[in-house]
Image (cartoon, rainbow, N blue to C red; front, side, top):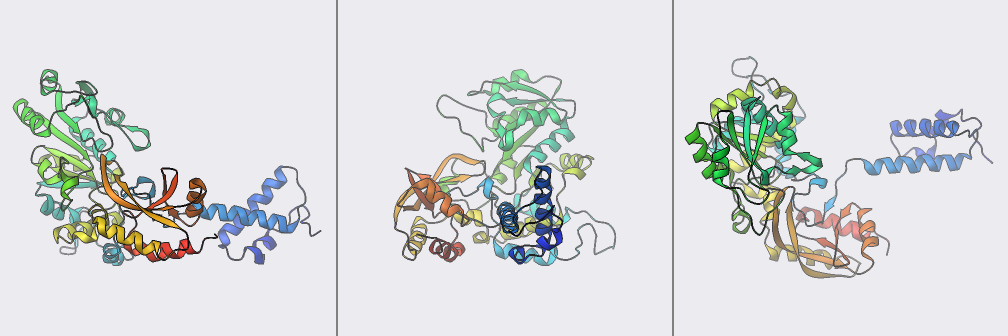
Length: 438
């Protein structure tokens, strides 16, 4: 047999034709590691072909974990595990020149001196939301931390127990508050909090009233909370601040059914001193924590030394800048998240029919429901259409996933939800399905 004695020929393995299709750095890494592991187990020889197949298999497993595009057929529009909001190609192309070149990120072209990295987006944020000032950090959790640390360090804030939530990745609002160096006073109960609860809790140590939007959970039945309007009125009477952690708020052009009882950023801003929200949720842009509010408060936050640790880079700023332009120009069709949320059911059905007629697998178009997702509107669903496939659901789910088509199991059937499948993905979807073995 063709044996490798004592594994001396790493260079020969790396250059073997069996592995030539893979990048050199992967060939080198896995050849060295696998041989080293075998030696550590006491092996001193191995059939060359077996060893090469093992190396090839490990490289393929690694590549499968690499970042790659998938087709979202889950029915969850803002899918956290799939990258939340998708940036429209036209917006990306507008940013390409800035991302691929040196830019005036912190350089004032007018006077030749150092400038602010936030300048390109701050004016647009003020135009869009009619706010006094704004700031951008790397996500909304960072915004919550920075706001509280800047405005309430070593002081006390009041929050309803029913709003002290846990967000994705086991991050809990009370722990974020504690880490920010702020004292938390809880009022009310998990299901009911009244204005008098806040009023009775305010004392000389109180700095701020915190309201957290229920963007990733819902309370139903015997429950009530206090509106930001009433909280702000109380805060003004007591000479303290109001902060609305909006999490996921909408900006413009959201369909009436979803917009009903859901806070609109611009309207909420009129009834609090400061607010923050995520850039990659209902706003439909990149991951960012967007802070809007009173100028004196924003100025204080900007002076916090922690801002440097939480700041965003030029790529985030460039994409956010183009998103803001799109909103200001009212070209809403370029906001992918809005486009999918507002999609007409007839158009969704047409997409499903188009694919059904062109694939080799037997399927049936069925009525279904989609979700907004991504910590937004947890109790709201949207009418949708799915292709339901005959066969064992879990086996089909894995088979489609191998082609980077991510669907779901519904009523013991594997389905593709066409609300979340973009029109630009349809031809690719058809090709991928037809490339599968029967």
